[in-house]
Each structure stands twice: as C-alpha cells, then as structure tokens.
Image 1 (spheres, helix red, strand yellow):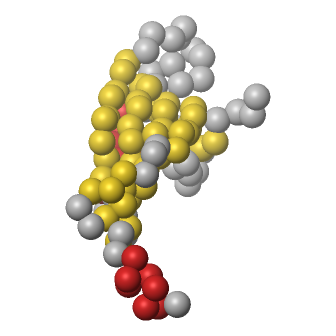
Image 2 (cartoon, rainbow, N blue to C red):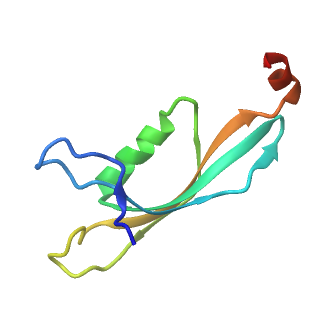
Length: 108
C-alpha cells in the first residue's frame, strides 16, 4: 500500500509537518437546484495548525468549494512517533457545476 501523499508542502526543515491524505472517495453527483454537486470525501492527518491552514486554503479556492461533514479527532499515539501530536480529520469537499444542458449545447 502506498504511503499517504502530502498535500501541504513544507517550505523548510523548520516548517510545521504536512497534512497527509489517508484516503479519498468520490461522492455521488447530486442535483441541487440548477447545479450539479460534485464531491470528494477525504481523510486527513496532521497537526492542528496545518489542518486549519489547509481548510483556509479550501475556503479561499476559486471556483468556490463547500466543506461538509467536517470531523476532527484527537488520536492517542505513542510519544516520539511521527505525527505523535497529529489530529485525524474527515471531510467532504463539494464543487458545483452549472446543470443547464442548453448552455453546454450552445457552446458546442
């Protein structure tokens, strides 16, 4: 099994540890009003400060993204192990796309 991928890069050795993706899952597309909601479910691990920075980047993303079902859990780990003070988080990230089929047909 491949190791989790870092998603927030550290800029130097003194930088805080990264947030790593434990798993991802595609969510079913939902129609919400005139839009299709397209989403991914993530499980993440990282220190509190880094998780907050990651969530802030998602909040500032363009096009806008919505965070749903956010869960953050403290996990007891043996002292001295990597990410001993890390938190585990789970969240759904949703993006929206125009569901107007006439607009798509007109562009073709």
